[in-house]
Image 1 (cartoon, rainbow, N blue to C red):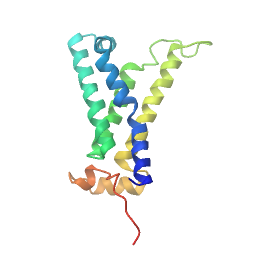
Image 2: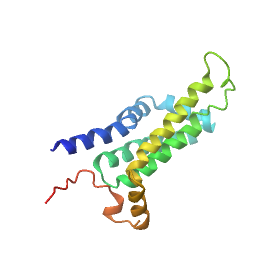
Image 3: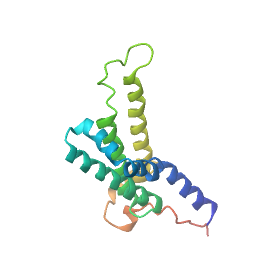
Length: 161
């Protein structure tokens, strides 16, 4: 394995380590607690169970796709959407009403977590769309369900002739 491949694996792992293994493992080991947290947003236990199982699937499958480079673009898009959705459902900084109070503030704590979710989504979307406007334009103009557009092929090393 070359150093560039090792670096690529490490950087991709840094993007998904929150989800896989840690958040996924927490959902598995503390399933009832996770469902209870989901019920705070949806108020129905069956829907809470569905949300947690769906989140668990997204965290494991999309993380593995990003790590392996297999269909990593759509996986990154889905995982970024998941980050935004969880921010909107569970980081509702506008609800506590103490955002502008001096001293400790639950709203400000939630606000920072909300922004972290959206920042992480932005970083993950770089896998989907690339790091330049040209890469994004090329992808969008040639979007097909081919291996070249579904995967960034992160572990292919091109050597100069």
